[in-house]
Image (tube, rainbow, N blue to C red; front, side, top):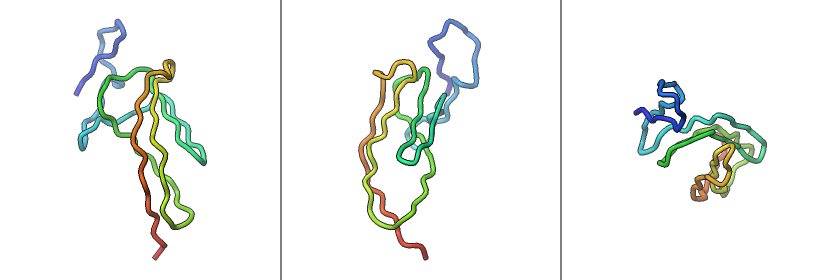
Length: 95
């Protein structure tokens, strides 16, 4: 699926393409940062819809943990953002 950016350039670019999978578009950040306590991802521009951003986290102990809601915002317009619901993750003991 192709989405045109809001720029005046009519040429198609790779960044305008996003695959649709399992009811959401793949979120490709323009900038992301991995920290011990959080992941930060930004886009310069984005259309309104559902997006999926996937990352891997390392479990260092077993138990049940509450994940804070995910907040995704535009890099140069942080007032434009999306927020997910919080979730619970259960880490099982190693076998």
